[in-house]
Length: 234
Image (tube, rainbow, N blue to C red; front, side, top):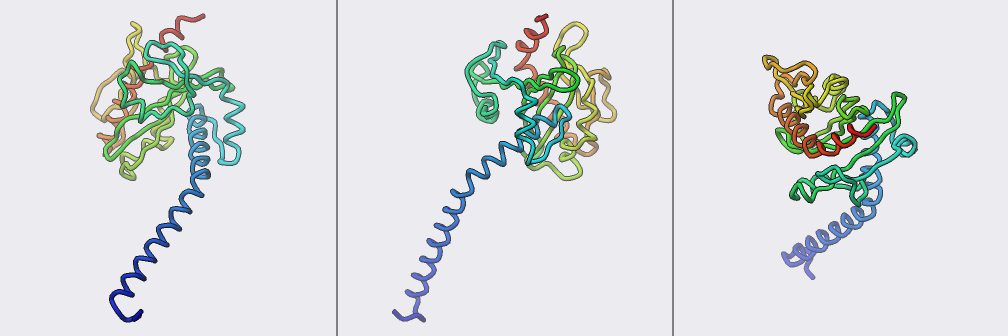
């Protein structure tokens, strides 16, 4: 075959494309178990971070096994149902009718008692946001929070994943004195709200802040029957 001809060039390019695609596909398949493991470890780190337990990639699994004493799935009525809380995909569950959703719960032992960790998922300005909210045993007072995002603006909406935004959630309450679930108001600078239910929003990140506020309201409402049942238990 004439190496200077168009046919040779076309065949050579085609073979190279197929070869590179095959190599990339093989590499992707080979790396999948490691990628899955890294995702699981990061998730465990985030769950623990919501109760102020900092870990590394090396010790996260050990600490998680020690501290998370129980995990389970509940339905919208607050009843336990079959399922593995750690494996529940909130994106998939959000697409289902509320009556069919699985709601994960993690119980974590801390130096200040057992904390109940609820996973959250919502929408920011540029993509999904998610996180974990830890409640004290009164099922009302927030013990800690950990948030993350896919593509919020650095220096603005992306600040939801920083301690300066997360730490003020501690000590806030999600029910008012009458027992009504009011969640948390992520307030703009000129917005008034009861202090016990308010945290300051991010300057310049209003849409992300309000998206996080909506996420809290929606997902805590889904857990409301569970929270009320736990509050009634001695």
